[in-house]
Amino acid sequence: MTDATADYATWIGRQEITDDDMSVAPALAAAATLDDTRTRFGNGSALPPLWHWFYFLPRAPQALLGDDGHPQRGGFMPPIPYPRRMFAGARMRFHAPLLIGEAARREAVIRDVRLKSGRSGALAFVSVLCRFYQNGRLCIEEEQDIVYREPGPAVPCPRVLDWPLLPAGASTRIVTPDARLLFRFSALTFNAHRIHYDRPYAINEEGYPGLVVHGPLTAVLLMELVRQQFGRPVQGFSFRGLAPLFDLAPFRLVCAANGDELSLAAQGPDGTTAMSATAELASAQ
Image 1 (cartoon, rainbow, N blue to C red):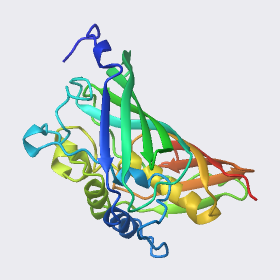
Image 2 (image 1 turned 180 degrees about the vertical axis):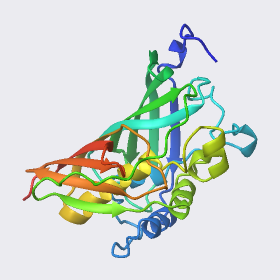
Image 3 (image 1 turned 135 degrees about the horizontal axis):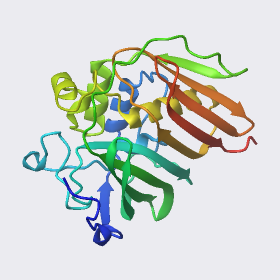
């Protein structure tokens, strides 16, 4: 393990550029995975918010994957050795939708690297700013929070309790995750992290009670609830992961509106908030 005095300052400012032809195939595969049978996609169609995660994918050679399935660090991302990696949160502004069939570019830069010591051991926080361009126009700005941490004690199996009462007027959806959904989402995002599809590895090596639901999948499902309920453009979105979800029990998505501001949560089977999020809708015309 690297000690807390390790200096990753030289990674701050490091950049990575990824181009994508924005073909229709990933959008069609995502729609199938998310059971969206209503939206029609073709050249010129606007991508729904957060679906840019199905494009601009990393393509590390197989020989450069670590035992956990993540690409070895030390290129764009700093070589932090803590094995547990999480996409812990993000803040986004949507200026214009990305269009299918038109080439686009993702420009990423490491904004900050911080090492801390928490209750669960050593932690490293990497802040990455991503900007997405198409036809010379800035479409999306996204600041990601990536967290690495040391191995900790085994995570207990979640309890199944009654969910709390819903706020008045709230929209909700119950999601029952399973290995098929997690495998398909891993394929959509070209994510080989084994905690999402390799049950013996997730339990025996990383100490989880089951397969782990991807944080981005939970965020996408929350955004899909917004898209289905409101049908209005989203200008801003932020989320924060608070606890893992597993394929062992259903979880609940909740969306409560206050004008153009939406408060969102994914609640685990014990009723605790596993992910909190907010969304800002474009003003109604």
